Image (cartoon, rainbow, N blue to C red):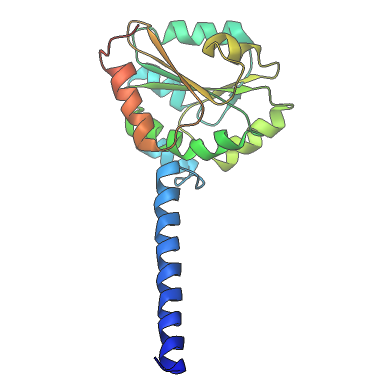
Length: 201
């Protein structure tokens, strides 16, 4: 093979390699939810408009970082009794939490008319850090500020972050440790453990 043909073949292989790497990266980003939020806060609210009253009350507080600690959280859970509930423990400094927030944005929009979503900002050093993150990554529900981390540990039974707790209509719970790799996996677990009648140990 002549040097010119060798050069053309090498160039073609290089272009092919770049295309393959790009396609793999694109697929990875779409599955992990690592990209930033896809919707604005206004778009999130618009898609949840007209939800049932108890869920609409959550949506009206979307993006807020609420106080009151454990008593306020327990009162909210009592008010939501009989509904499927998703509680996500996160922190602004937690990279896996940031990576999965796009999945929670999508799931809270797709399922938010049937399922109650609540966040717990656990062990953030300041409320300002949590609020800044919520502004940059809009979701359709509020979070409770948990500076000590005690509330998040009590709800999830775990000191780690992120953790997601799924409650079905009877109050039975399923705990998912670690970040959700995709919106599809999150929604599948919600359908199975919060909306469905999956058996539990």
